[in-house]
Image (cartoon, rainbow, N blue to C red; front, side, top):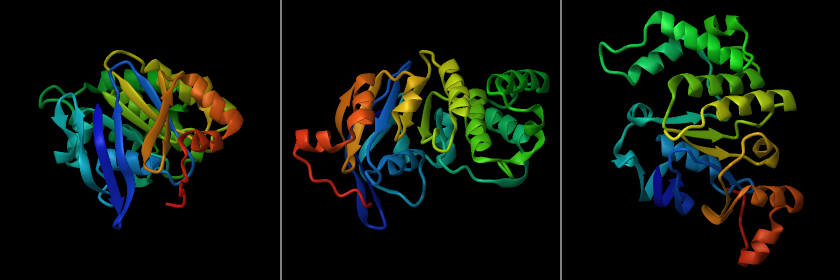
Length: 253
């Protein structure tokens, strides 16, 4: 996925202000930054949330123009968003949702068989330490925060996207749940999979080692490095970044 000079507004206010990023297969990128600098806006805009207006730039996925696609077309093309606050959907079981999502990316007549689906679902739920009865509960209905986050990772593991965007997937997780979620992400690592992790905390990156860490401020990426950059942010905060770049940043958006 290649993002070039992306600009995104909400209610007339520009939030993402010329962001550039390229994620290749096999790479895990992490974006960190203070509150209000556009991280979650970026995630929502990439998946086509209707409240966010893309006013400039381009997003390409494997040579296709993402911005010309509807939300379902982006998912079918191989994009996936693990949401910070997943919606509850009554009347649709977890298993039915997952099987429909998998089949939506397959040609007619090539749908996954029920037995293969059940075997894969049981295996992935085992990795994530998800009780088997959760497959038959309505999607996210009555789930705890930790269960919702594990369920988002389960969806990613079953759907097998080309690009996954994880929007603060670690928020609200205790250390044991964090390790389980990280295990699921690490199982996905291969040359056909790229991942963008949006997080406030370096602790997640102790368990999912990123290839690149980016700092986002004032709607754009202002600094990039390796995992040591996240470690410095954890130890020193963001003031040194602002000082180094001579920035005065409004982070109320």
